Length: 234
Image 1 (cartoon, rainbow, N blue to C red):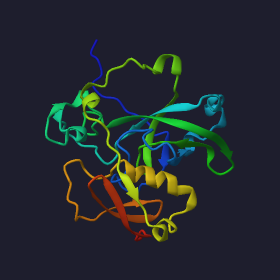
Image 2 (cartoon, rainbow, N blue to C red; image 1 turned 180 degrees about the vertical axis):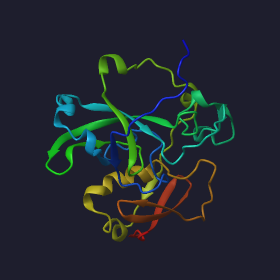
Image 3 (tube, rainbow, N blue to C red; image 1 turned 90 degrees about the vertical axis):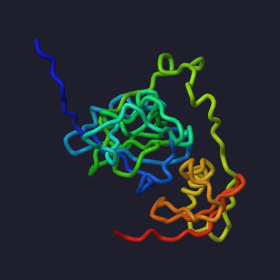
Image 4 (tube, helix red, strand yellow; image 1 turned 180 degrees about the horizontal axis):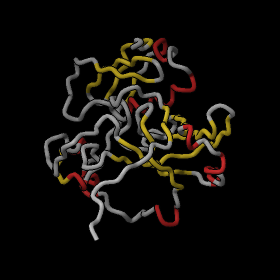
């Protein structure tokens, strides 16, 4: 019997986050725990019965599509940012978006399940590493008795220590950020949003967050915010 070589997946929901583009998005889920997001189901899946019992779990697995990285061709090797973009490893030894199937996996904390009249069940989650409107393909509960492996080895990531930056955020600029978003934004900045291969202390970097444009410089382990302004429309 001939086996199928293709399949189709349905988008069941979309996540709404503070990141309009991929720049600034944490490189893994859970790195910035205060980041808030909402998961809103597509109309065909807005059924409260489908999330019955979900609020008994503290964390979820999200299976989603790298919607900005879908392409026909793939490469068997990639250059992970954690290795500075200088060393190639097998694509299946990484979480790179450039893979045969542009599918991502994230573990997020479930803050609450909200049942709404107009949008159906809405999942409020924390710590997501996804762009705004990313398609969600599936949602599964995180099971600590089987999903948690404290003894696991992390491959090449065990030897590439995650460095955090000291964030200098002038009070007059921080005041332009909604209070409920300040802790998360500072966490994003501390994780150093710059590509690992860029280290120009004079360069001003910028990214969109919660409807704002955040501009910063970084040098000698210190990231300094230089401007916060409303994001331009369109």
